[in-house]
Structure formats: C-alpha cells, structure tokens
Image (cartoon, rainbow, N blue to C red):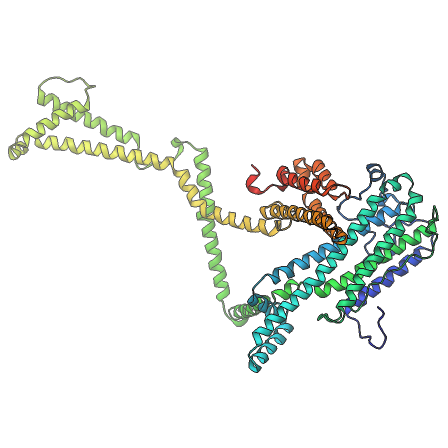
Length: 603
C-alpha cells in the first residue's frame, strides 16, 4: 500500500490540504502530551487553530442520538464547558465525536449518492444531456468535440456517449455505496461496543477504560483493512484522476500494558489523542475521496442558464445605457415618470380610496351620507298629491263625500272605471268629459311608482357601497397576497425535514420508511447469517434515526410529544432490542405522533 517515489506526481489542492490538516493535528496532539494537566477545549488556542483546517473533533454538535449507556451513566456525563475534565471521562467525549463525525460523513455520502442514483434512473437522453451540458464549460467543449468526431468517424457518437454516461454514473454510485457500507458498519460496531461495555463503564470506569480503547482501536483497524482492500481493487480501474492516490492508514496503539487493570493518566491521554488522530485521518481521507465523486455544484449544473442570464443582463445593460442620459436620451426618465404616475394612480384607485370608503361605511350611518338620487320626502310628496287628486276625482264622479283616509286603491278603481267609460267616446270625453283628467291621474301614479323604485334602488346601492369598495380593493389585495406568498416561500424553504410545510412532513415520513426498510433488511440478514451486512443495515438505521431525531425535535416539543417520541427513537437505536419489536415501534410512530402524520390525516 506504499506509493513509490518514482510514481509520485504533484498532489491536488484537496490532497495538500488534507496532508496539512493531518500533520497539524498530529503536531497538536504531540504538544498536548507535554502537559500533564487537562486542557479546556473550548478555550484552547491550539484547538481553535486545528479547527480552521477541519479538525473539529472538539466541537459540540447541535443534537444527535445519545450514547447507549445506562441511565445512571448518561446522567453523570461531564459537560465539556465545565472546565477541567479527567482523562478517564474524556472517553465519553471521544465516543460522541466518533459517532458525530461518522454521521456527518454518512450524511455527505448519502446526499451525493442520492443525486447519482436519480441520474442513473433517468433516460439515456437525459444522461447524455448531463454529460454534455451539466458538467461545466470544459466538459461541454470536450464532450461536443468527441461526439462530433465519433459521429463523423463511424456514426457511433451517441452510443459511445450513452455508454460513457452510464459508466460515469455507475462508478460514482459504486464508490459511494461502498463507502456508505464501510462507515455504516463502523458506526454499528462502535455503537454495539459502547452498549456492550456500558455496565462496566458505570461500575469501574478506570478499570474498563483500557479494554474500551483497545476495542475502539481494533474497530478503526478493521475499517482500515476494509477500505484498504477496496482501495487496492479500485486504484487501477478508476476513471477519476487521483481519487485513490492516498491510502488510508491509521496509527496503532503502542505497546502499552493492555492487559493491566489500570492505565496512568499519561497513557490514557496518549491513547485518546491517538484515537482523535485516527478520526481526523478518516475525515481527511473521506473528504478527499468524496469530493472526487460528489455531485457537481449548483453553478456547474446550471452554468448554461447562468451564462445565458449573464448574457441577457449584458444586453439589457447595453440597452439601458443606450436610452440613458449618458447617451443623451431621456427615455428612461420618461418611463420612470410614467411608471411612477401609474403606480400612484393604482394606489389611489385600488388601495387608498377603497380603504377610505370602507372606513366611512363602517363608521357612518345612512343619515350622515351625501344625498342620494331619490329621497323619501320627495316620494311622499308625490304620494300625497296623487291621494288628493284621487279623492277629488272620486267625490266629483260618485257625488258623495269620501273620508280623507280613503284607500288609494279603491279610488283608483273609480278612476279606471270612469276612464274605460270615457274611452267609448274619446273625442267627447277628451273635450267635455273626464278622459284628460283620468290620464293625468294615471301619469301621476306612474311617476309615484318610478320614484318608489328609484328609492329602493338607491337604498340597495347605499347598502352595498362597502361591497363595491371591497371589490375595488381586490386587485391590490391579491397582488399583496401573491407577494407575501413569494416572500414566505423564499425565506421559509420547507424542503428539508426540519421545516413546517407539507414537503417537510413528507421528508419525515420518508425517514420512517427508510428506518423500517433498514430493520426489515437487518432481520433478513440475521436470518441468513450475514453478520457484516446486518451490521451495515444497523448502522444505516442509526443514521436515519439520527436524521429523524434532528428533524422532529422542535415539532415534537411544540406538540408535547417529545418525551415519548425520543424514548421510542432511543429504543430503536438500542442493539439489544428484538428487530420485530423495533418494526412494531416504527409502525406505531407512523400512526400516533402528530409530527409524523400525513397532512391529510392530521384533523
């Protein structure tokens, strides 16, 4: 696994950074061994310098699965911010850091693996488009030239492009899947070892600490052997330049008294520092290897769209410059003035005036409003005039005295009867009869009906003035609503499982599905006697449980479900629980907890 000096080549920048970070952490650990006292990691200058180059082993994570320790030991764990910590108690922080960094690396691998798996499921044309147009300008030029050359040579350009795209994607899927397998197995072994020695750590920490450190170091060496075997197989067949140039090599425990009952503080400090060094070597190796097989950056994926956008902005800038004062044109000033006038007009017509109208309608009575088209007094005058006309006509026609409160309908029947009789001789009735007078009475009656109708219509319009004002304000309201929704969508970004929206709820339920699938595969591997595959499935289950733990904590605390839900997640992470019981717990979680229910079933 050594690299000869004859085959050495200039290292990429990522490899140089990884080597620099590795030796800086090594120097940091060597300096720390010179001091017999414990260092406060939060205030150590050397620790901060090491963190600049990625050595964040002393950093405290936001949240994660707790260590599988008995409740008494978990409650007695020392806080990192408490100042001086004994060397023996540092082992708990070491274990937390190992699990934290392993989960972070798994999260990075899973993110990139999901991208390549989605590309693998796309059509051949989509894969070809990705190879040509979504890997940057350099790949676009090389791919286009090669495609044209192959098409002109033997007509197999597209076929070769399809094959190259499939090989490109499948190689990255294979590498990332293998790394996920190794890290998941590593995580499961560490978690199971801590669970196995939990009781001993509670009873006698000083005595059981050497055995735990030796076991952790052995797990690191197993990981080195697995990745080294994979490294040797892929070193010659990889199409990615320099992806396997740096083999993973961990430091081994020195020849201390591993069988002894107790180590000195100096020996314990050395072994803990060595584990931190191995952890940092693992992080450096994975950061280089994953960066070689990661998905393209967003600016690389959409470089054509960004280029077109930049070109469009350039043309727009030239067009604006042509119409600006710099070129002696006043077009932009005129357009700005027109836009300002239109905006002010829109504001007054659809925002200001409707709001004032609604305010007036809500706080003023009908009596304080302006005079309408028809008032009640005018209608009453017309009605009184018609009543007097009917009364005089009826008394003269019938020849008797009518009371003043006589019915208009009764007197109108007399008028109509006389009108019909006069129509028999219209000329005589018009000249010497009552035909003209009856016609005038009917005109007065028609006038009264029209005024009453206008009065009712005016009252209807007045009663609906607030509705008309609201209708006038609707365009501005809908425009404000659309802008508010756009701003909310921009700032909220509910695409991740920690969000509040429907998409975030779907992501949390997908995590439940992944957890259940991992336990089902774990049960199948145990039944078939596949120990390594079973450990891998258990490690993946731990990874998805950690993601679910982070995603639901805030929501479960808001609904009061966090205590029970956290207990279920911890039970699912325990190695000693039966797999069938874990699957039943997952089914119950999917049905019972509000933060995990689908949106359609919440109510």
